[in-house]
Length: 187
Image 1 (tube, rainbow, N blue to C red):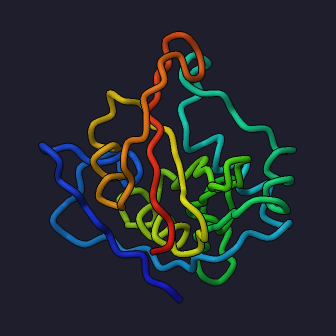
Image 2 (cartoon, rainbow, N blue to C red):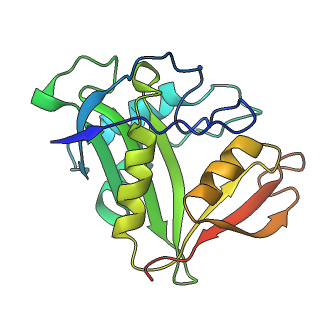
């Protein structure tokens, strides 16, 4: 069992949404979990985690349907942070406390599409553990997109070794700009 330990990065007193949406207390919050490849039994729980991990405002979020999670379980790198004992203690997502999905691109890179952590488990280091496991499995460069105004996330990704490749205005919609960041992959 891999213990997920927190990595709090204080960046001008901000914390990355990858890890937490609240300021951590003085005690260390540890959630035991295993990081492993998702199975075809997991796709409904991962789809549920996706729905509860992101805001449901149509102008902020385009949800992934349950059908795409089934495909990603078969075709993409889909890692889950599983709580021990097969516990179904987390609302809707069963024993899955977090997930990461990366898929290959036509440019021989991997696209890190999402890292998500159940709201009850944020701040416990699960996002960091998922990122580390995903990068460790990557055999090519990994790219991701991030809102250029999210300075905490940009700095966090840079801490993991990502560099800004380019800025694309209107990436998703006219008002949704993105930075394309790239991790070089294995050295």
